[in-house]
Image (cartoon, rainbow, N blue to C red):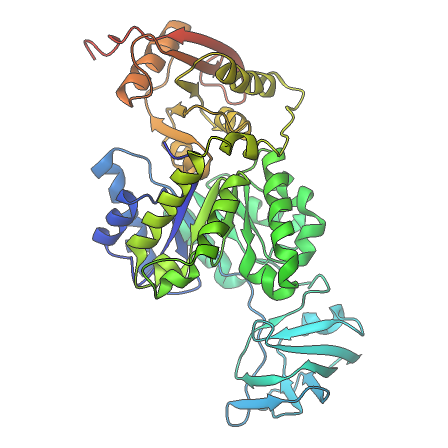
Length: 475
């Protein structure tokens, strides 16, 4: 009953049914399908292979599709490569001819209007830094602050301004429609700068999946709470944040994003380079182990593996060591003290008050599990926000809800038929707790549900019961 979830990216190293099953058996709770690489037909096969685990293990599977988002790139160079010297002038312009050491084509007209004199431009993941000195309708003059080699179609980052580019490209819209048709559970949205970007994504999704906003642009930090209000969850995309910001600013921002998401009751994923050395090495560095542990101590809902499982030489080992790190951290006697450094005050609602009370009851009297019945998942999210010290068994009649809860801290979701009475709730809750070994004779269970049953958002019942141990007889 590990609390933090492990999100594993699938790719060439892990896209066969056998490898997916091995990742699952070694601790992967959810799977990320990256739309930046490969064709939709390949992804359809991948998604089908993930779903096959549901039948094999009778467990909900969780699939997150990660949209590529807009990619800003410069044009090409005569000879394919140039060397820019620090202090030299360099121009970006609308001229499509191949560039040289003095200029290059920039095929993004939106950027010309957004820039100001003094703005930084980062090329090739920040390896080359330019400072804007003059702007015209068809050119941007800069001074090279950090020189280096620059080759064809390298990426461009603009960290200091909000770029007036939609977060969803035509490719993203096509990939989104494909993902929804495939019935995926989460959609990760790249290049989020404003709440309006999330609103557009939510409108296109239309409730068919949950939306995870990737925080990878400095502009998004300034409107984090507004973005979280609209999003269903958030990802700390440390790779791009580390390009656009000084690296020393990323750790405190990670903590800020995690704590804000927790306070607002939204799942938060910490991603990028968590066990980066395991792309080529069978063991991680001590610093990487510490990095994963820090995210877990902060109370992140999930930690993500990217190239480690998608293209690395040791995908199974990467999942396995992340699972072992998490179990070690969560067995620390001080673990629950540490994750409760972040205060999560209840909202002024009955459901929030009961969720907070369930955590306090679990801490006050010996309890083996919290059992919650939910149709939409909102009850489970409220309880999870409290980071209770006992397992959270989530019972739902909705397959869609059970799958989406795969990124939620501590939630063990089981799809079961709906309940229609208080007595049915108690009986089913007891049976499921015994079936999944979350209690034995004499153990207490905390049960939460909403009456009338099956009505989303109606959580209003908290009930404490004792197991006799024979509830499964005849079932």
